[in-house]
Image 1 (cartoon, helix red, strand yellow):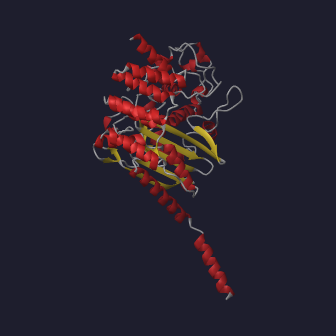
Image 2 (cartoon, rainbow, N blue to C red; image 1 turned 30 degrees about the vertical axis):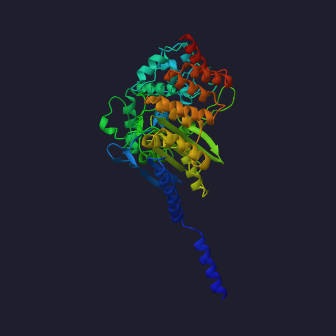
Length: 474
């Protein structure tokens, strides 16, 4: 009897301890349930990949790359990375530094003497970690579809001063990464796209990755992006370095794997990319070289988000356990960080909460089918009965109001802005938006009342002040 008892105990223990393959399958099943639910709810269209301990446990694509052509989104579909491109630009600089062709402490003036004298105090390192003080070109009023690095450069050299002393603080600036791309071109003697292809994409077998510039064949751009209200919303601009790269989850996992080795640069060099910048006052910033940095429950994490037009992208590398999360989507409504948090919970065998659905998107669909009154009724009903399912944030109705304005439905826009004011009576911005809609409709008195209400809440609201002056001058 004793021997039988022992054997039975061993058998039970064996049954309780799942094999790694069974654990991986259970994780994959839970991830699939999550992503399928998100796709059905209209919150995900694209591809996702999850790796655990360096091995892929889940990879799948959902929906369409182009709704008009009915082309499926696959794990090999290139997606516009937007700011996720910055890690590749940073790698290009690190590769050139590894070959002794430049130094992280080189001043900007060494490469671009056209800049004012302050360029002598800005280094490549400052550009890499966003501590240069150079203004973000998106704040110069020059950003437009098709903007080039030359356009950005010509505007930057005209700036008489920096925003702050280099190294004083962290301030995200796309300008720095455009300048880094130009430095790569100047030092390597080749185009940014050519450098990326020859030195990173080809060696790593990233066959679906490329830099999109004027030389890119249109046939490569198979994917379209869609905005909050399902309208086509392609990526903005044409500058590269700060953005400009297309890639797939297949390729980005190859990229992730390469960063654990020394195919591109040494680990000692790469460690600098994953280290925070030291500021002049002795504190550190949350950014390395092309990577955002954080520590979560003892896990060292490097990550980056990207967004342009309807494209939304995300990559996270959990360095302690070599876990990877890659999310590429071509719909603006995809809540990447909430999806990421749900994935992290699944990997930790914890419960997760589905992201809230955009109430504005749902209202716009109902408005198109049954009219604005039905959309407002839908809002009121669900805010009372289902507050946890839909996102009723102030920004939701504000965006819907401006969408209706854009299609010249001003009476409907006013109705939505009034609904937002009723929901957020203490919001200066909500009253300001209503005032703008009244003014556009020609109702100056109601507009003035709304702007005055906005200023009573926030006397520093410059837009409300400007619009009141405009009314008084008419």
